Length: 375
Image (cartoon, rainbow, N blue to C red; front, side):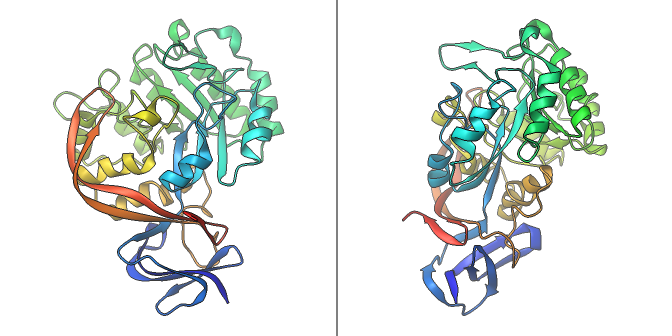
């Protein structure tokens, strides 16, 4: 007998090219069947709603209580439908053990972290205090980073490095070079944040390797990926050609509607949509992953593609093909989404507003093959 059956939903699973109204059943913590007329102990009618693989947010900050920028993963999972949170370097070698024991291990939802190259991680990030963790090179010890990455190899996805005027100050590109050395030593990718210059996008893009992630990839000028004439910059095209992964990482200051329109018009989709939700951006303009996905929907990207960029593509970016899919026999995780129509005010990170006619809202979460939220 199936434990849970979601009836009559529009099941969209980009990993299988699936998009049809049908039932999906879960048993023993796994996807048991997809098809019409299924039955089970817990039957839930999701007519008119979308059933997606559990959403993956590739860029979040969820070291709540251990860093000033952290937000609560469980709360966001309940309100925003995310089942896997990728923490983008909140913790460094000096406090990663606390992140693991006090947040990751007790969490009802999956948290997979990148290790920050800076010893204290992102330690001073708030509305009133903002100190880049890579502005002082005394805070970077590559041997400690290697040690901690190896000790926690079962969790650490890669090395996070933030460079730019805000994050690395006078240190410039040096933290990224050290992060690349650590990543190479450990056989890991890096996720690179770039804010305002210096360094320039040329400095960063030329260093990224296949499988590395550029987050904030559609940031506004300066360091935007597109020229004023709408042409995608050569170094961006070259990076994609060699396998660099382009992630949105909306956040509070890293996503522009103008850049996004130009990139989409040029045929350059991001590889992944993520929110970069943290203590500031959770109050806007990012809010959560579904809001960021809604913006792309309103900018003309079709729903199956939007879902792919937050499920299958995100899973591929972290080399976890078991996630972001509803394949029978796979993990019993799903997000139930309601698409509503109306007039919705969306903002980017530099104050431009857009009125969209669509919005995606979380209508339910399945974890471990059981209905988890709302109770």
